[in-house]
Image 1 (cartoon, rainbow, N blue to C red):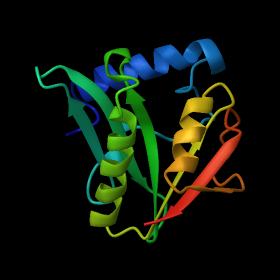
Image 2 (image 1 turned 45 degrees about the vertical axis):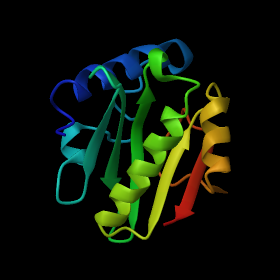
Image 3 (image 1 turned 120 degrees about the vertical axis):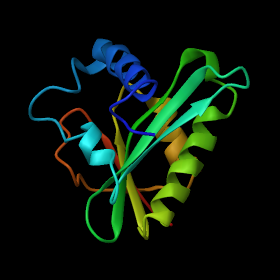
Length: 146
């Protein structure tokens, strides 16, 4: 699904709005690029997950870093989908999408006000690495061999 079209745009906007209370605007100048064009083929993809009733519940994307590495970005689960395993299923789907794009490793980051995200990534097999993208709001950078 194109990251620049609804419902992806609506879910990404909700994520940015929610995180503003923690970090300020994460779509401000100087932050790592996460524009819809970053998530377009051939090197990227955007996924949207839906509830059984058709309501959009989750979004996430893969962005090309280099020939071997895809970065997982803009991962978000709406409040109605939380604490139900949606985030783990979304992460697994994004990893599979990264494999299909030809990446052998996935990277991601998260900030100190999102301990649940860090716990998810560690439990999914991401190992902590050094800062690879200059995200001033992050305190965890992870990588996983796909």
